[in-house]
Structure formats: structure tokens, C-alpha cells
Length: 447
Ligand SMILES: NC(=O)c1ccc[n+]([C@@H]2O[C@H](COP(=O)([O-])OP(=O)(O)OC[C@H]3O[C@@H](n4cnc5c(N)ncnc54)[C@H](O)[C@@H]3O)[C@@H](O)[C@H]2O)c1
Image 1 (cartoon, rainbow, N blue to C red):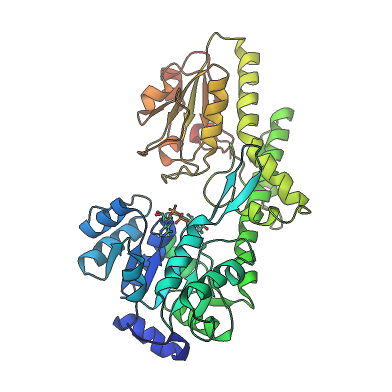
Image 2 (cartoon, protein in one colour):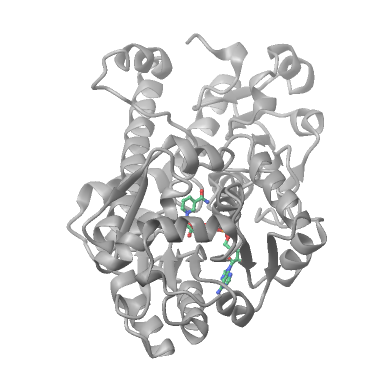
């Protein structure tokens, strides 16, 4: 649709989106792409979902797409497919030429070389911006939502977009950055009502266009930042804050374990003082965000020592939990021939099916390398579990717990919270140890 967003008023943009005169392409239809599409669809907008996965595109268009992690997102997309307000394609030309706003949600993650050195992998977003650049028109807006090392959008991505399109940012097209801050499972609420939307533009005109776009969906309003680099840093800071605080919780929990203290009892009391907000410990830190974002700064800023140490503590956490579980078991029951180890939860978080950077994979590897029989339970289906070959995966909880010696509660899935002590006593070996650093099991809880 021909329109120059840079010349339009906020009201014209809002009305254009609501009336379907302006439309949106979303590039990368994963958790974030689906979520951001759904909030605009809920306002009556028209969306083209573009993704490189042919099977995903077919599933969306045929109505067989099954997104279990967020019912609200799933229901909205399903209905909008039926109403023909969204369709999916692998084709950049079709998605970019037919729309005005191009929202980029393809992943940027990290990769490790053989020596363990970590670097940022920009390959997907470089490819997406190249293709958007080829097909974009004067008056369009490119909106990046992917979390990025500060400076990436104004530097690398702007250059690709300008080189490929022959257009100039701020004069011919708007370049906007707005970090996605959703929690998978309640994304619609998060975008619409829980948080203000952070928006930055390459210049004032881009910023106004970005503000107009997001004011349609963000009831909590917009926080305008002075530069895109600042907005990129904002999101990275959020992730680092969580990583450092989880590392602190993990370390204090280890201290309590050594001293025979109940971490959760102490933290319950400590957190009753409003300036103290000790986080929850766990078996490690998983997901596409928290374990990744610290490296967006660390890659070029070795002076950030606290960030570095926190990352190290969290990366070593699965091994620490596994090692101390074995020691505790041997101390309590003596050396056993071959231990049966059960890990409850493959997903890194409760009640969602997301195994990206899941610490369960490291835990399972540790135990299997020490000759244990390892079985991992999770209530969800996974195409590829990512577990070592000799580790079993099951959705059958009874089977997972049968004759088990060491049970590690790794994820806070609801199904584990309700487990009774009698279930463990009935199914597990007489000689068994339950390790629950997250304090998931209700029967175990004092607090
Ligand atoms: N998952 C979260 O909770 C969350 C929260 C906030 C921000 N983020 C940010 O959003 C980004 C995306 O996260 P996600 O969870 O949606 O990832 P995801 O892996 O679920 O989805 C990414 C999608 O992008 C597609 N893709 C890859 N390369 C592409 C290309 N060149 N063109 C078109 N599509 C392409 C993939 O096929 C996939 O479907 C993350 O890198 C992160 O920066 C994620």
C-alpha cells in the first residue's frame, strides 16, 4: 500500500492501521513474532507473517498451527487467519512490498567455538535486513524488536538497509527500535497492559512514527528514549540484572546448603524488607534471553567483571548441583553400583515448552558421563530434545520416578508442584534423594 509514514500525522497512522489502509509485516514468526502480531491483530490490523520455515507457514495458513505456550496468542491468530487479516509466507517480496511497517523479530543469539570462545551470531538478522532492504519503499518503517548488542541497529542494520534499498534513513524511511519485553505465556498482557513500550528512533521523525505505531497497543504508554543505542542497552540491562541476581541467589543457596540452613526460609524473611529482593535459585539459567544477553556486552567490554562472574556462576550451576547431589547421596546411603537419576523438567521454565539453553541438558550430560542411568521427564512434546543419546526422555511421570535414586526438580511445571511425598515413597528406590533448589514441591515447603 502506497503511503509515506514519515509525512503522516499520528492520528492518520492510527486510523490507517485500524482501517486496514496501512499494514504490518512481521519477520520471524516465533514466540515474539506471534505475540507482537497478535496484539496488532486484536486492534483490527492486517498482518503478513514472514518466516523462513515452509512447514510453519503452511501450518498457519491451513489453520493447523498449534502454539501451546500462549492460548491468547494462539486464539487471536487462529481467528485472524479465518478472517483473512493475517496470512503467512516465506516470501520477502510479497510481505515487504504489500505492507508499510516491517517488524523484525528474528533471533540474534550467541555461538561458541571449539575453545569455548563466545561470539554474537548476527546471521539471521543480517539476512532479514538484506531482504527487507531490497523490497522496501519510500515512506516505509523498519521496526527492530530483537534484543541486540547496543549500536547494532544504527550501525550494522542501518547500513544494510540503506545499501540494499538505495534509500536514506530518516529522509526516505523510518528506522525504529523497540525491545520486546514479553514473558512467554502472558505476552498479550505484557505488551498491552503490564509494561510501557520502550521506543527509540534513528531521528525525531522515526521516533514519532514508532510512537504512533505502538500507541495503538500499549495502554501503559510509551517511554521515548533519546537514541536507539540507549533502547538496545535498556533491554540488555534487564537481562543482565536478572542474570546477576540469579547468580547471587544461586551462590547464597550454595552457602545455605553447606551450612545446613534453609535458604527459602531465610529469603522469605529477608525479602520482607523492601530493599531486599533476593531472586529464586535454580539448577542453572536457561532460555533464549538471560544466558545470552550478558554476552552482548561482554563480547567487547571485558571490564564488566560482575557480569562476567555472574555468568560463570550460572553456567557452572548444573555441574555444581549434580556434583553435590552425588556427594550427598553417597554420604547418606553409601556408594551404589549404578545410580538411577531422574530430572524433572526439560524446559527451562515452568509450564512452557522451551528448551533453549536448558540447564537440564547439562545436568543430564554430567550424570550420564559419570555412568548413571538418566531419565528426563517433561509434560510437553519435543521434536528434538537435545539430550545426549544415552539419556532417556519420557512424558510418563511414573516411569520417570520408578526406582530412582536421585531426583532433581529442574523446572517448576505445575504438575510437579502437586506431587505428594507418598508418590516418591511408592515409586522411587528406598534409597533416594530429592534435590529441589527452586522449592517447587509443595510437600517439601516450609515457606
Ligand atoms: N522468547 C522471548 O521470551 C523473548 C522475549 C523478549 C525478546 N526476545 C527477542 O526476540 C528474538 C526472537 O525470539 P523468539 O523467542 O521469537 O525466537 P524463535 O526462535 O521462537 O523465533 C524466531 C523465528 O525467526 C525465524 N527466522 C530465522 N531467520 C529468519 C529470517 N532470516 N527471516 C525470517 N524468519 C527467520 C525462525 O524460523 C523462527 O520461526 C530473540 O532473539 C530475542 O532477542 C525474545
